[in-house]
Image 1 (cartoon, one colour):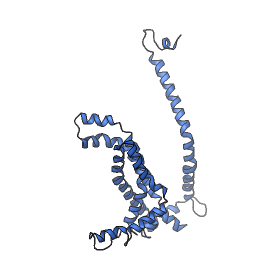
Image 2: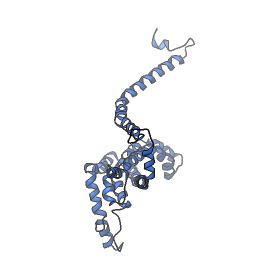
Image 3: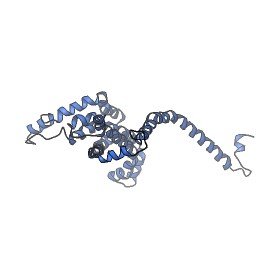
Image 4: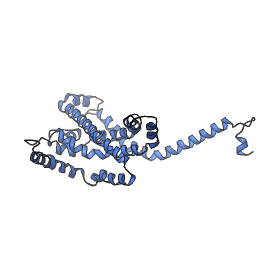
Length: 265
C-alpha cells in the first residue's frame, strides 16, 4: 500500500488520525533537536552560574562556627551603609537603564529605517567603543566633564553658564559615564528586533487609514518590545555589578555594590 493511499480513509478523505500522528512525531523530533542544541549552553549556565551562586547562598546560611543561622542577613539589614549601598546601586541601574532607553530607542529606530549598507556603517560606530577598554573611556569622560573640562569650558565661553557645572565626581557623572558604556547593549538587540518587523504590517496599517503616529504606536512599538525587553535586562543586570566607572566618576561619593565588596574584602 502506498503512502498516499494509506493516508486516506474508506470514504477517500484524508486520515486525520494519521496526519496528527505524523505531526506529533515531527514536533517531538524538533523538540529533541532543540534540546540537543540548547544542552551545551544550559550545562554551561548551570555549571558557571547556578552552582556557584547556589553554593554562595548555602554558605551564607551558616555563621562563623558552622551553625545554621540567619545572622549574616540580620547583620546586613542592621548596617545602614549596606542598605544605602543597596539603594544606590539600584538607583544608578534604574537611571542608566532609563537613559539608555531614552537615547537608544530613537537611535535603533533610525538605524532600522536606513538602507542595509548605511545601517551597517552606522553599526560600526555603535560597536566602536568596544574596541577601547572601559577604563580608558571612563578617564575620557572624566576629562570631558570635570570643572575645567571641555563641556564646562565651551559652555562658559559661549556665555551659557557663569560657573562650571558639577558634572563629575557625583551621581550625574556616574550616570553619564555608564550610559555611554551601556548604550550599545540596548541598541544592538533592539535594532535586531526592529529589523525583523515585517514592513507589510506597517503598510497594511497605513492602507487602513492609520496615521504614521498611530502605526508606530499600535504596530511598530509592540512588535519591538521583545528586543527592548532583552536590552533592558542586559543593561540593568550589567549596571548592578559595575565597578570601574562609578569608582572613578563618582569620586568616592557614589558607592555601589561592587565597590562595597572591594572595601570589605
